[in-house]
Amino acid sequence: MSESRMTGVHRIEFDVDWPPGHVACYLLPGPEPVLVDAGMPDDRDPADPEGSDDHDRERTLREGLAAAGLDPADVAHLVVTHPHVDHIGQVDTLLAAGDPTVYAPAGVRERFAGDTDALAERVERNVREAGLDGERVEESVEMAVRSLERNRDLLPPAAVDRWVESGDPIDVGGHSLEPTHTPGHQADHLVFRTDLDGESVLLAGDAAMEPFRAVAIHDGLDDGVSETFEAFYGGLDRLSALDVDRVHPGHGPVHRRFREIVERDRGSLDRRLDGVERAIGEGSRTAPEVTARIAGDRPARYLLPEVYAAACHLESVGRAVVSVEDGVRYYDLA
Image (cartoon, rainbow, N blue to C red; front, top):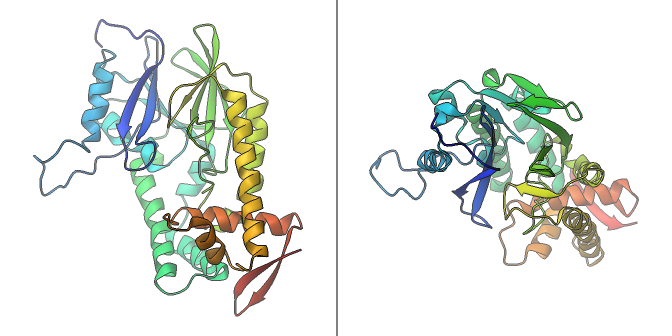
């Protein structure tokens, strides 16, 4: 390890192709460097290895670590908030360079052990019930299967040394990290609270981000889609119970607006439910129809799971009723 030492939390940003244009991971100070999340994978063209460095994310990681006086081999601990591609993309770089102790949410273990054929069957059933047909069914199934296969390649379960349970503090490189389950954006998502520099710091992943609320993907269009909003609200309730001075999120700036952002996100979920209810009342009776009405000219790829989850929640709380015709779920206001 370089003789230089980190003072405070060190942020490493990777460029991504969606707003706000970056994803961040964080190094915690101390003699045993701790990295929280691992950025994006490389996506350079293998046929043109000497091409543009714009998406050479391994280089981004190495340069970010070097700015703190470290090499990938110096990272002693890797803590994962959730298994989305932009948070686990450089795990293989760290494993190839050294022998970090890897910590990941306990729920990921069972999720990654899932059978892809069974996942494909569940997603196909759910999207047909939602009202998709033809190529859109195939695309949804392929996306779900590809996501599972890619993510468990990026974060090999055999490489995880400790599966972390919510509420069970862990000592990592001299830091006591308190994990809290905050699903909704991703079903296994954990945030980690710790004390640094005399302040309560939240390593938040994709929770409590200043620019916007994370999309309610949860587990996509798998069977957990019906639980998405209840899970998201529950995660916000658990966040609200935390004492936090400073937030280090995966997207957007480090900020001190923790309680304000948590309540903003709760209001955003409320407004999504109201918007879906309004669209149903205006005659959009299936999840794809509601999605199209809300999306307008914007891309709807990641909006459909959130809208379908919202419709399921409205049904569960008695604000909408469902009738099934030819295997498709049609919504009306209660």
